[in-house]
Amino acid sequence: MNYFELFSLSPSYDVDTAILAERYRDLQRAVHPDKFANASEQDKRLSVQRTAQINDAFQTLKNPIQRAEHILALKGLELSHESTTLKDTTFLMQQMEWRESLEEISDSDDPDAEIQALYDSFDTFAKQITAVLKVQLASDLASEHLQAADQIRKLKFMAKLQDELARVEDALLG
Image 1: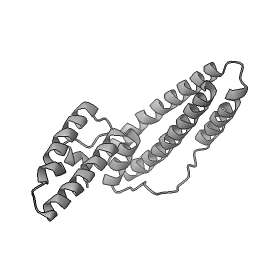
Image 2 (image 1 turned 90 degrees about the vertical axis):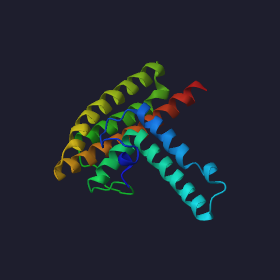
Image 3 (image 1 turned 135 degrees about the vertical axis):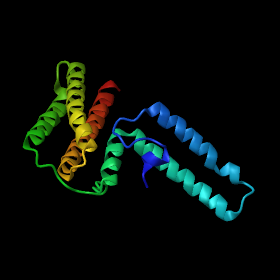
């Protein structure tokens, strides 16, 4: 199912989340199970299924990484449940540096500064990846889609690393 069509949006990495949320509420009102309380069992079941479908679509489109994966899926490249590893040695070296920095935070004289430096580094890197990803997702070339898949894999790694950093930060605070 094309989630962009469901919400009457153009398939694009950039989505106006306010419009998405507004259309989500409109769709939910139209199919909410309460509206079908006196309907047939089949209509009730369809309402529940449609509500779940709308919820899944909304969650996918509001998350940039999942949205990018959905765009690739619409172009015929499925990333969910894959176990492909990145072969970008520069990125792999950067990963190792970030991991080392994460491990060293607790021993740092100024852990707050180290934490902020990592957040800034993650943010800068993610912006660079996202700029490239937007161009690749807009392309009709299969080679660009394969490269976009690698950018998405990098963003997924970055999201995990950011979660780890948040946990380290929480542990230091309390």
